[in-house]
Image 1: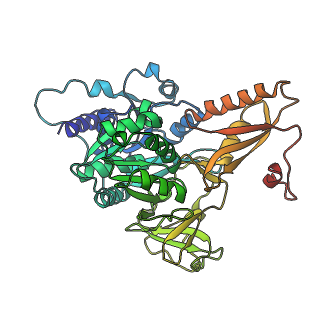
Image 2 (image 1 turned 30 degrees about the vertical axis):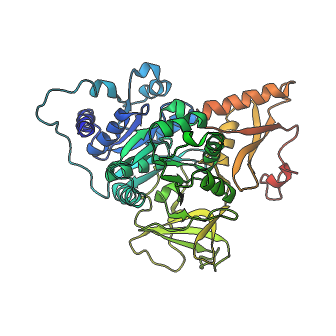
Image 3 (image 1 turned 180 degrees about the horizontal axis):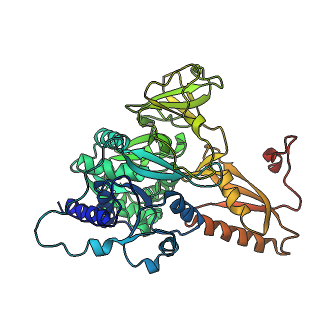
Length: 486
């Protein structure tokens, strides 16, 4: 009841500030009940969300705000203490709202605040940003119909109702964060925001899971591996025995990690979720036995047809790798329009020979094959897009960011893949302007610092190599990346 009342106060304040039906609203707050109330208030006002991490003020975040052009940026405290808010305040038409001034002491009982009519199913619910192939983050819009359908399915399928205690672990800028929030609230469970100082520290998170009696955790396989190390080193009484569901998403899931988790957490259901931001998710698979090689991504979610096709859009036979194509009414209605941006229409084209039928299509660029038991198995990417610790990154975006450093003449970024098929770090090759510093390490420190300034807190583990000659190129004039690794 308190959450509902707080959401109504936020909705009323946003409406008064001109952020009503159809308006984008950016939310940038620390974890806690207030942040959840603001998310609900934005939707109640008829606006749609863009949920930003509470820290980070690099070029990436400024680019996201510039493309979004929010009607309001909601903070929790003095904007003078937030570098991104200070930058945004100087933009034309910028409006800031301090949530602490709205969600102060609750007023005495009285008439409910009035807000605009609620949104319809076809209205936008949120915009999530992922890396773009042009070197600029790409805003992906999604409707209330899609968010509502997935949240309802997730909450029911994974028993997130009364009695469940769900960790809100995923970073705000990734749409699985919204999925875990709304699945819990819709199902009637208890949502437990993870404090920032705990969230990415496995030594602190494992005791927090025990202390908070967490039943559900959604994370990425690379971080689950770190958690497994802490859990196996703990006494049996210090392990998260209440954890009934561990949902893994965002990366390929190695079989040896699955087997380690099953041994350490024998009463925990292990779920592998797959899907691009453009469809929220697409497939799921519950792992109930030993796994050899990568864990399958499983079977389509309700409301989604997942096909594996060859270069001519023909279905690939079982065992043959092809591109994953998703057909669903829950495919994104489109990307944020950016002046001079690329044409993405080909990504949403139906398979060859099929006429539009009301559903939407999305060509993921992911490779997969159908196993002989009918389950799908992820086989990598068609292009230079990779998953690093659960973050979807375009290598070209990192290259574009580094090329903005005046000391860089040209550069190339390659992924380093371990034996389990996970990208664990980046190999960055840089040709400096001129001769570069005599101290190679000074150049590398400067480039690493530049990337931190561009991407904020986003983890980019990288090994830098300074080259003394230009990047190798093939006959077409493109960078020959294979020669960089020889």
